[in-house]
Image 1: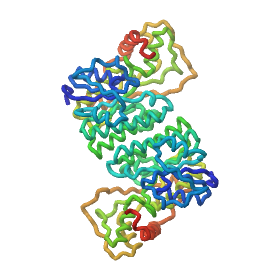
Image 2 (image 1 turned 30 degrees about the vertical axis):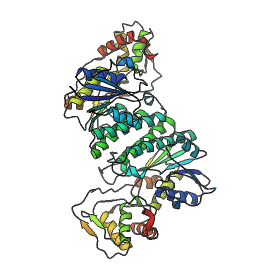
Image 3 (image 1 turned 120 degrees about the horizontal axis):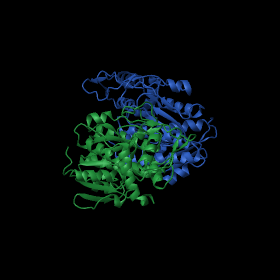
Image 4 (image 1 turned 90 degrees about the vertical axis):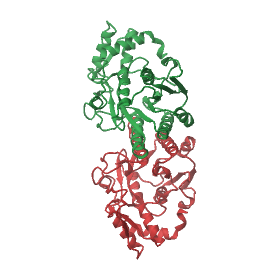
Length: 313
Length: 313
């Protein structure tokens, strides 16, 4: 599928992931319609609305709004996700409304025969049973966030089998970059550097993540949507390699030209996971090839933070 | 835990499973509070309300109602489940309200420190990957019903880990018996016999289920609730053995003293599963021992149907 002239709805299109994705889709010649409630999404994340970039502002839990937003849409990319559900012990009222919103989207996608791209998460896997984590890894989420994503995936799978929903599931890893509103570790480290604060690594810093620069995430989504082999499949989308917290801290120090030493908190290791994500399947089938290395990604993010220190205020 | 004097909330307590369970709990000396919206539940399923049997009528999706219903409750047994979600392609609006209701219950259980007994289903397993199906069988539901139950289980598991919810998960097999409103195969066969209609077996009738008489289901729940080894565990609850559709038809013929031959529809096999459910874990840990054999269960159900032919009108 080519994106040129294609009508794409991006839920959460004014948020971190959704806004980068919308930018890229516009560049590919797609008509983008953003559906956002602006809870964590921001108007300054998106360009001017016009013929190729439309806005539907409101709540996914409002079925009429969703039905209207889906009109003439060929592809839905569902990046919207309430920030609160990513937190520990999230308010269940938010889970309810997110569930309602998700089901509204599925229902309308089936009706409109639109392709539904579920932006899921490696949170569905829970703790690592083996490494690297591929798509066959058991799914035992450890957080409400992971459970919600697992449930969404299962709805997609069953609705595909029983009602002909066209769907692609993308399990994305830890994404960082400009417009990151959630204070992830790369953002926190860079932000500390800006403030002249030393960064602290827990334990020996061997734990870590497959940090993914946001443009590589966008690339993964575009590879999936334009491939003719992706529908009905599940792919991990992540950066090229595993990065330990120590390496992250060291690279931040290098990129920010900081003279502050990295400090260690040997006692405090709340999360010892080494989430190395296997992206062989996406490399092979949809030709996804992440290309932004850690130093480069951190540098681009750092430049942006320096110019946008007020972003989290 | 003894049930004597215990305050138990039975959601769906006026329905098929819930009403049998409430009867048994009352016999054990528990105080039973039924929460039911009477969509498929019926007033003639339950006894007179009074000091030991209370009624809260309304929708689980109403959070204030649920909070009120949970007051002073020690155990919640969640049998309520909208009949429509058991059907193929259920209306997603029902899924939304069921999800909201379920989350209301969990939230209130955590707050009240009540034990939450989730009546799940073998539908979470989907098609058999191996037989007999034990609790470690992969969970790949094939229906919306199965997905909803899987999501509910996952919420229980994660809320237990993160918020201290006390919970027992029971995956129940195909249950039949008096007050069965869903027209399951045993009920359909018995009903046909009452009407003097022949029963048809698809294929050669080797496919089948681990049919479970409702009193054995009740026994399973009581074993779990009264055991001190059940909290945090998942158990299959099913009858003693696998029963093929042919055996079912033959036993119905015997029990109903029918002279009509069983007919075969060799072509029509829409479901060839042989869902033999392994209950070893429940036998061992909570000493669950189903005791109603097929002929006996069918006989009891038949007697009830004969007296209640108007039940499905």
